[in-house]
Image (cartoon, rainbow, N blue to C red; front, side, top):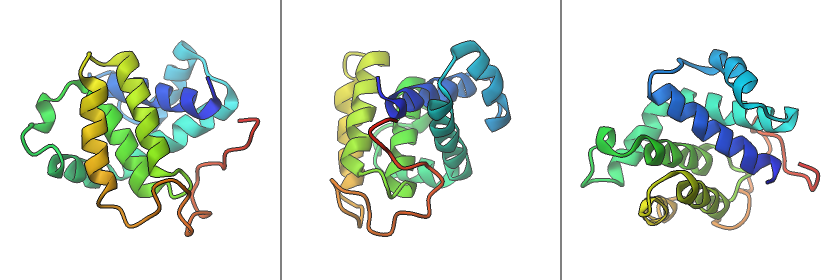
Length: 156
């Protein structure tokens, strides 16, 4: 598993734990890392994702509610809800990550940790959101470069 995939998976696990009442914020990540264990690169990526998501959580949840109109956000499974939140964060605020990469990663995590239907559900919601974006689907946004997430290298 690559560093970014490992960081995303850890971020989802942390957000799930937080959602279930097991933590409050980025300051709890150290305890989480002690339990889970991650490489330094995966930790940096995970922390940048979690802190960015928490910073923009209100906007992310608004976008999620808009695209899950027949579902109450609180009634979505905690796994699916947090996978969607993280992918939406990446699509809206991480210009150096192409939206299709965020969607593909989210689907893979949903298939691994969610229900039998999670992959399709996550794909459907994120595809609707992708269609509203004003950025390239398959390449980093031209305005990227000022983000806090480290660029991907072949060694990450």
